[in-house]
Length: 292
Image 1 (spheres, rainbow, N blue to C red):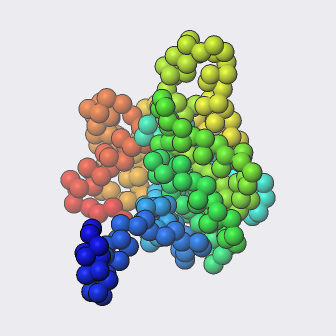
Image 2 (cartoon, rainbow, N blue to C red):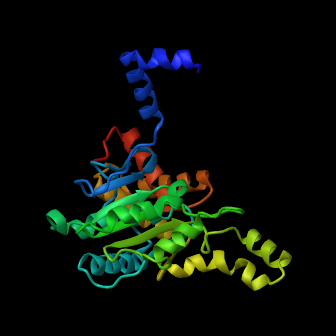
């Protein structure tokens, strides 16, 4: 811009206003400094911080079959946390479709049953790609009087990914540490949150093989609870189907339900909670019944 152009711009208030508006649109949104009203949020740092979720998609905790031990452990840990007692961060790892993320949401709903106002637990979902902004979120939550469960679904790290360092510092390390009113739950298909072949490769090429992977593998150690989820057997799968069918009052004979459920699993090449729910959705649609 020449000196003459600058003088013309300064003499034109409307042009200056348009330039200011354009710059404001380009600037990143300012982050909220307090926890908004509500029980569930998604952390969207690019969009200004915490975005309220009016209705959490969850299933009744009684419908989660085949994971009773994991359910009871996570529920007890979350209840202690809600009561202000010591509780652990939790890593739910293992087979796909076995209800890891569903369990976190169901436990949140169950613990909030009967609670009111500030006594209700808040649930904040953090996307995997936003893990490196976790310290910013913690600064916002530190001053809150509420108890908060932070949740990251399908968490894992690949080669050259350094955002895990932000998570390690947020969980236990770092000069500020994790606020006492927060806890972190994560789900993953990997027990150590990184590929097995990457662990082996770093061991084989490093001068000190043990130290080469210690920093990444030790991330899992920040989780006091490790809850493993494994592929279900036929009896567990049918129990899931029968539970869903009874809960939603599907009009089908028990033997027919069993036969069709097994055929569905065979067509999908496996059994899991996700496969069971997909079958129920298909069956309800065919029967002309809605799933409440």
